[in-house]
Length: 232
Ligand SMILES: [Zn+2]
Image (cartoon, rainbow, N blue to C red; front, side, top):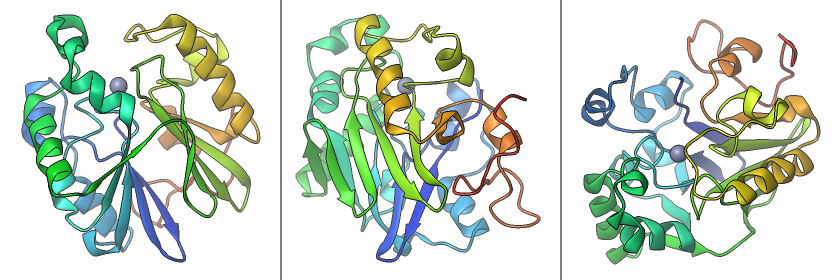
């Protein structure tokens, strides 16, 4: 399983989609920490100061960390996700497990600093960048559609962990609503301009299929360029 942070570089600034987790959290959860989002951005010539907005697809531990590394960015979250992560759902061990209390506390602190924008449903973050509430995996899961040189690309996050979840219509077993999950598969397909335009949230094939974002840089790919193949 791979963990991705995406940067949408536009004329008025850079929008990040998700912010991963810190090294300590990754290790605690049994995963290798390869590098921080800050280091990954530096590899493609970007710094924290370039990031104007962060779309957090949902507050699971591997998507909502490191927000203090981007103190100037506005945080965009679905209202339903914060309600889930801070409300009665957290009485359940199964529902609580993918959330990290320290991260949630950071979010509440930033909320009180006025840095969070809540959305209900679909919205536009910037021209050509829209968010779409889908639910299923979590109540407040949102996906991001980006207008690129090759058409509309959908960052599906955990609506589609692996290409196989979509191709075989086989849900990843961490979910709160199977009905919403299946509807989300239809939504991402509808929003994208083709099968090569849906980007799964955790599939190592993404790094294999897309060209390097910069020559010689490992582990950073360009989604606005054509993938090598959608069938390999
Ligand atoms: Zn998740």
